[in-house]
Length: 102
Image (cartoon, rainbow, N blue to C red; front, side, top):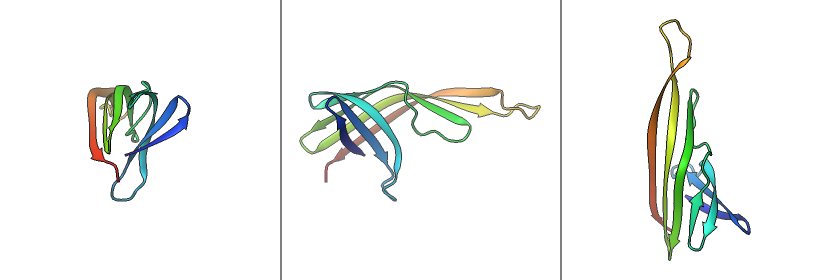
C-alpha cells in the first residue's frame, strides 16, 4: 500500500499487488493530522460483472506503521435462466491492511 500527497488537502492511497508492484486500485482520501478519511463512492476491486463501491474508510500513519480499513458494497451480476444478466447479488466487503513502512 502506498500513500501519496496529491494536493494540500488530498491524498491518494494505492493498494498494490505485492507480487508484481502493480496498483490494484487507488483511493482518494482527505487528511486529518496523522490520519485520513477515505472518500466514499469510489470503486475498488472491480471486475467484469461486479461493481465495488467504498462506503467509508480510514487510513492512519503512526511512526512507520500504516493501517488502512475500509468498507464497501459489492454488487455482482448473476445470469437468469433466460440468459440475461438482469439479476444481481449484493454483499459487504471489509478490507484491512496493517503494515510497516520500508
